[in-house]
Structure formats: C-alpha cells, structure tokens
Image (cartoon, rainbow, N blue to C red; front, side, top):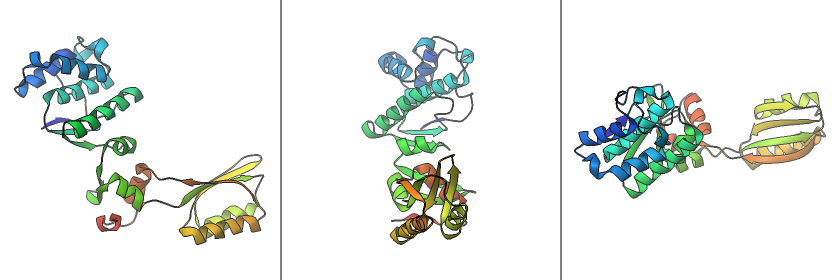
Length: 243
C-alpha cells in the first residue's frame, strides 16, 4: 500500500519531480526505466510537465501536493490511502485527478481510501462512504443510498411582490423554513416539507395570504447536505441510514 498524508513533507525536496517518481517507484522494486511513459503520463495529468525537472523544494504548496500524488501513483500499489488529496489543487487538475482515480479503481481494480471534508470530491469519486462524527460512525453506505435516504422534500419558492409581514412567521412556525430573502419587488425562501400534504398546506397558506407564487423548484440534496444532516443531528445510528 501507499499513502499521501496531509502536509508538504511527502516527497524529497532536493529531487526533481521526475526523480521523485523514479525514486519512489524504485522503492517498490519497479525499474523506473521501464515506466518512463507512465511517469510522463502521470506528470502530464497533474499539470507538472513544465516543472518536471524542478526540485520539489522550489514548488508551491499545491504543486508539492501534486508531486506527492504522482509518487503515490508511481508506486503502483493495489491499495492507496489519500488524505485530503485535492488540497491546494486548481479546479482543472482536481477534475483530471478525479478521472484518474476513477480509472484506477475501475480499470486497474485498485482500492482507494480517501479522507476529506470536500464532499464534492467524495461524491464524484467514491462509491462507498463512511461518515464520522465525534469519533463515532454515523453512516456507512453507498453514496447513492445515502442520497436516497436523505432525499429531502425541500423547495425553493419565489414570490412576486412584497408578501405580508406575518407570512414569514407563519411559515416558520408551521414548517421548517430554511432561509428567507426579500428584494424590492420579490421574495424567495427555502422550505422543508414532510410529504405532499404539507406541500399543499404550504400552498394554501400562500394563497390565503394572497402571495403571488412566481415559481416552486424542488431542491435535490447533495452529499454535503447529507453530511451536515448526519453530523448535526442529535443522534443518528448507522441502522437509520439503511434502505
């Protein structure tokens, strides 16, 4: 197995990018002379071609992180542990790396364990997620299952004109009003409703208040919403997330 730990001391600073890949490959008994094309492909994927012969100590923090990832990929181990692997990477490189990690898992059958607070990365790359809160496992399931379990019936509602002053308080008292924003000639809020009965009740309240509904849009949850829901709930057991 191989690992990239958070921090900047994952590589040898006096060696160049290419030399680091060759060195760490060699530690695993891989002759770097037989992996030249693969190492160049890794360097290119990580956007390090222009800095390939530069000593690691002269690189920015983000580039040092890229080199650390490169040396991990160069080791060709069946198991990879990556701690915050996208830290300091630009958007384009992050996307390229996500694609590479998915390829390694699907085509080369590698096991990749990622620890991260970036839920977008986890949702894009991982198929199984374990969520920890205060040292306890509060969820252990697939991304798809977690999204299905926490498929919230939340809506974004836009109103035309200025609604009555009591409407916000009335909605907040009856339902879970997530936020409220008003403009000179409109209002917008997000609201969580439990089932179709509450949805129609909400619509009736708006109509009774003579509020003009401009649009109602259902909000699809993402993994970040699920993470917040799991880690802020008073008590959530792994069994409660089973489908």
